Length: 125
Image (tube, rainbow, N blue to C red; front, side, top):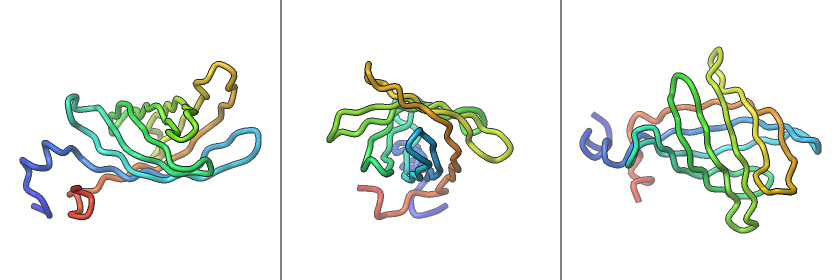
C-alpha cells in the first residue's frame, strides 16, 4: 500500500502540498506549505504555510474537485486572512482578504495543490 496501512491513513487523514502566488498592492509574493485533510469532518483541513510574512497556520475545508477555503493566521503577530479558491483548468484560483477590522488587504491567488499518496514517516510525528 505505502509506508502506512489504510486504517492508519484514514485516522490521520490525507496529506496535501500547496504552493502558489498571491498579489497585493505592494507586489506579488509566493507561498508554500502543506495541509492534512480529514479528522472529525472528512473535508476539514489543518496545516502550515510559509510566505513573506513568515510561518502561518491554516484551518478550513477542502473538496479536491471544487473548492479550497481556509483561514490563515500568523501566530506571532495575530494577523489573519480568509482564502477562497475554486478549481479551474488544473489550477486553484481565488482571492484572499484581511480579517482584522482595519486590514483592507486583499488580492488574487493562484495555486497548485498536490496529494501525497501516503504519509512519509518523517511527517507522522
